Length: 255
Image 1: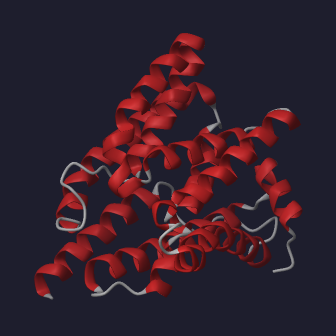
Image 2: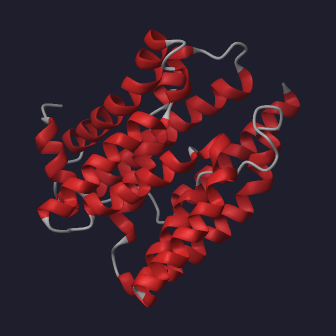
């Protein structure tokens, strides 16, 4: 894992350099981190700080994979958005049952973040500036129900920044995307506790959110260099997301 930060940023700005297997490895590490985080939330009393820290890399990694894929075939953006809306709605009842008592009933799962930003991109592609305004209004409405469990404004900002960073834009535009992404990552976890618990927040929330995704990306590139084929089926994330929630729900009733 000898990738430097500039080297990793170059991979992010030129996504085609990541092998399909490396992208699948990033996805797998994100799934493991999410599973650890959800087990910690649902079953651990009190929650374990190390498990919480490991879970901080899940959403940034999922966002990276989504951003690398979403711009492909822009004429299919609405198809991608429709698929995400459908899976988000299907998953929501299970998500609400698993996290009942931990999150309010109206808290939305992370698929709604990707659905909302993909819808913005689809509207922008089809209707230009008017579509961008309509998509931005939709996201503004979604911020409140996304805030308890799916990072709210910071999550939407990270998704937007990642799209700009990986979208093959001009260097100046890509730099803006990187800045937005880094600022969003800094705000993603524990910002409200930074003044009251600065050491714990930095150690178990802020730093893991910034460092662990880069480590996971570096490991994935090291283990799966260019030329390695993908090893996970298409759309596996959707099945794994709702599937692991169903398993957690079953375990909760057996616990």
